[in-house]
Length: 451
Image: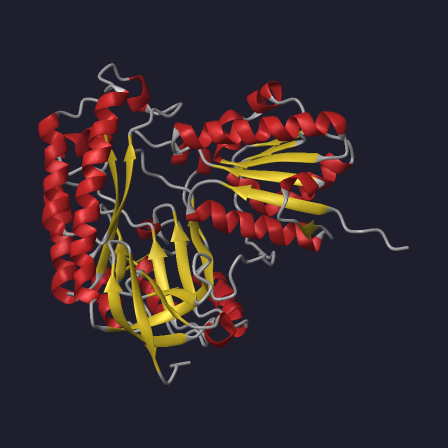
């Protein structure tokens, strides 16, 4: 009687980069003969791909890990892995805190999972957190979607924002070659993926570390050049990119987005604060005036483009007036979406040891006020969609209402409309918007379907 394959479960915390890493590690495990299970307690191997950007995400990892460590005491055949940024940050300290762990591996080692796991299965307890050159990825990810896909273009980050732990845990910038990126996109296009998001922790830095990256006084390998290079990949209908940094965001990039039909009219450009003194303390390398100039250029060249951003409130020393400068920027720019967070001190970052930390009460109050303003502005931005016909790429059934399917506009606004997923999944559909909310839309499909 054939034996059942060993089962695995991956829980992913944090950013899109982590989600992409988890898909690649799942691909490695399935290539090794493991089978996915939705239920962690049925798994023979559990992998937590962790995030350390904020303290609450890190504490959640320890909570999950504690439950599985108890299970391992009863079932020594269970394999426990912590990957990602907490693994990189804590290293061997994790083994002392949770001795039941088999493998601790930083994000740079995601492609090496098979080699590391073979050492574990041979009886070793392994810590892999040393800096390495990330080898070109030849694994086949187990993609969570059959419609949209992530493609990494640059790993790591060379910036030194005073609040951010990413450079410490994800290492220095390492760009993939344009040919490797295009080859992965061609495979995805052939497999039927309609939308690709190009990913980087600081994607505007793409290419500056590649050999021969300068030519006649300008970088030859830039994100802009990459967009032109991959734009004609067959089968791919939409291209997005994230995450941008205002310090490196260029007018040339905006012009390329306006010119290239497949590049979606959506820009995610974190500004973090609307106050220049705070931006300087954060080590961001730009002013709020420069940020506004970027937005003005986008609005001039692409008037209907959707804008999203990241903001931190309660940074050490932030005064009420400085916070109000952030509110003013949000009020005046008119974002479609903002990811907001209260400042959280992270180990090994300069701001974590400054004496001018704010109380949790002040941080919570400011976060609440910012979120309230954001919901008002998002509702205002949504009004422009009412009655319009939008192109929607259909991704899934609406879990809350099975009579509807869901997808996104080119501006990344979540949209629902009546329909069967079998008829619409992966299709580009013309939908007339009949109802708008702050962060989503509802509409009626217009026939015929585009593709």
